[in-house]
Image (cartoon, rainbow, N blue to C red; front, top):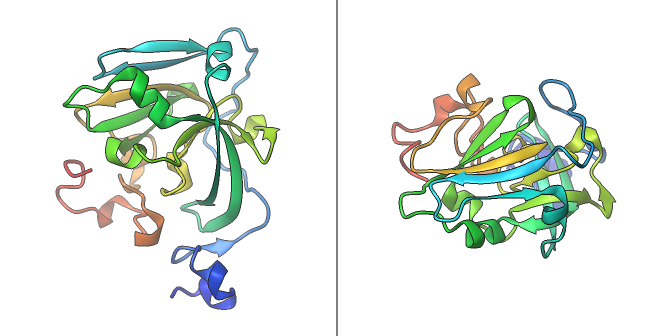
Length: 207
């Protein structure tokens, strides 16, 4: 058990990955300015190695069936928050509509200002992954990703890209903004997959 977990009750300590500390606030971390949003000049594009590419306006997105997911969040900088309640569209609904091709192995999330993040389709195809616009019953604040944020609870929080504008399915991985700067392609917190030097030689070939 890591240093930070020792001071927590067992039922809490088991939810905090090694090297993490529990915080009660929601720290704001991102690169670049917060984008503006007017509700009109925005859409979500789903494209790449899929049979049915499509684009959703904000109104069309909000009209889709929604789910609520309770999940913890772990930031690679060392903080963890517990019991976040997210509301949005399940990623599996995107999969069902887009129909990924047989060669689709990766998903590249595209966000404002050209930011990208990458994860294997296996990691994304989970029942707690969603495209969220609400947290704890409130619309996301702009600094936390409004109008749309990808949420991937089982990975470090940089994989939960803010200000989402596109999802690209691909047979080949393309490392994202932080991944090309030395961060791990898979980013599993309980395995402490923080940095690219920890990756094996086949990291980008094995989801």
